[in-house]
Image 1 (cartoon, rainbow over the protein chains, first blue to last red):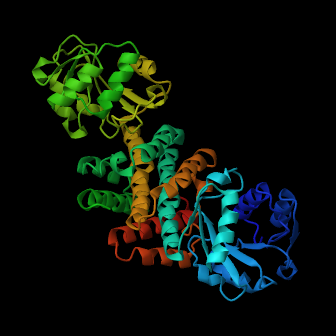
Image 2 (image 1 turned 45 degrees about the vertical axis):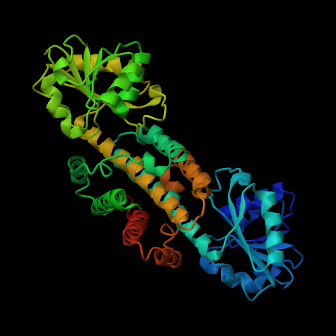
Image 3 (image 1 turned 180 degrees about the horizontal axis):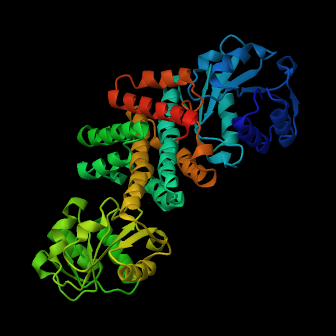
Length: 253
Length: 253
């Protein structure tokens, strides 16, 4: 494993549970790398030249823009090289080994929170049909939900995940911050947040939509805009989101 | 109960479970009003003049902009008049009876989905201390979580709820629609959506934030913008949300 971040913790743990041995971990920061190696009972190194040439699979688990830098660090052209990035094409792995692929888990990982890896959808792609079979075997030992997906579609899933996770999390944060500013407990919103997701899963987001923008209730929206008048960023965001909801009602998404 | 919409279904049911009798329901549409009356074993009428003068509490459960129209429809100045709107001030109830208040449930209601009303936060306000005591008694019989809150703060909670529910639901809808357009199952996003909420509840939205905007990862954001280039509404929304996340990182919310 090249990298010792959040995903390395979760993937490493899932690999170990599936019976794989993590031979060695390369990391940039001594403390994190050592901790992860302890957790996975693996060796570790801070020197990329010390990557062993004997592993079956090499996972590159570094930030997207750095993936390509490690393609030529794998010391054996017969080894299988894998990256796990949603927004990065398969082809960045070209030029190193003859065997490469992508295994993208559609999930948001934090070191602090345990996850049931077997329930995470894994999107896989490989550079030829034989390697796709090998990668499918590997992925199936980690999760019940594995799907073949092209680089082109994978980045779309990544974009959809940004809307469904990054942006929604940010908006919930805005809601909580608005309350905290007036010393109102953000926990007031918790039952509503839980219900939001239950409605998405049971009714779907279309029928679940409610609120002033959906009803084009300008009186209520004006009251909200008045509360945001000294927060230009939030004011714009409120207008843009409301406009987009009104537009969706009239034209579909 | 004046009104026979989603909230009337849930509130009526909670009142009945708490031992109250629903004497009569007024509604605009015969079919919905009759169904709700059956469900609550209550009388109903389509003529606002037929509201009885004998009830202890009168709930006005109509759209916000219509609440004021019904203030003078309550035939007895000694009766207790209540509206349930988050964004509407207490004072719209002035001028009819001497006893009035607000009971705002911080939740999103759909007729199709049962809810445990006892877990819904209820924000209450009344026109004098005696009436606040009466309303507190009523609210406490419906929910474990009742809080006194001014009209000024209540509309702020309503605004926060729009961010945490209406807007997040819309963004999840956008994510799902992006996938459906390419015939990719939106269920791919379900574990991620569930985890988003779990992280909000356990870590809080600040530490839970991830994604390209948080990292100011322009390469990934450019890939996403490319995918949205023919969808000007979503393109703007993506830019606005990403900018707002980047700004939050640098300046707080």
